[in-house]
Length: 111
Length: 114
Image 1 (spheres, rainbow over the protein chains, first blue to last red):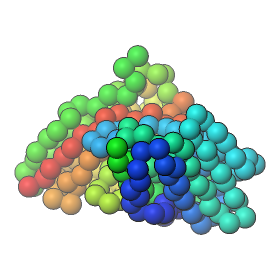
Image 2: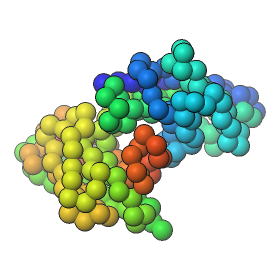
Image 3: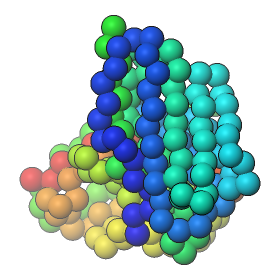
């Protein structure tokens, strides 16, 4: 019941550059969430955007949601080496009961 | 607050052995979840609980059982381990339904079945 799919699978950038990763999903949702996972650690919640919101900011993070295209993007501005991690989007499954994570985007920020 | 803790952190089992993974949260959350994460894949939901004494199946429940006897604890059991259950297991909790509230994750348990 895969819902969210992140793109690209892997991204490598230089410190100071912006990183953009995308998430596409298949069915209607109430909200979409982004999580970060550092290597060998659990996931950490970054931001939640509701279906009636188009854009949300949190520090250096900017998330957009386009419900007509069933897609979301996560922008990290002025990236730092500490941003190196995997980033996952999560949405409800097709039945609106369970929470489904995509396979993630592996971001590498080079110093 | 310790948040979400998992015990043990690592475990190696032989095929056919059994074990129980313990998850504990001190945030008074109603909802708790067990996921598995395999290389190159996102998290897949095994079982979840919407409150003390209740459990439900997720996407990949076969081969696992769970119990939520106390609100703060969620146990995941493997009755007869198989190599296909080699994975990293994450527990999570949320105040209410994950559709509305963020999930808090434990550090994970790395399980190898030989």
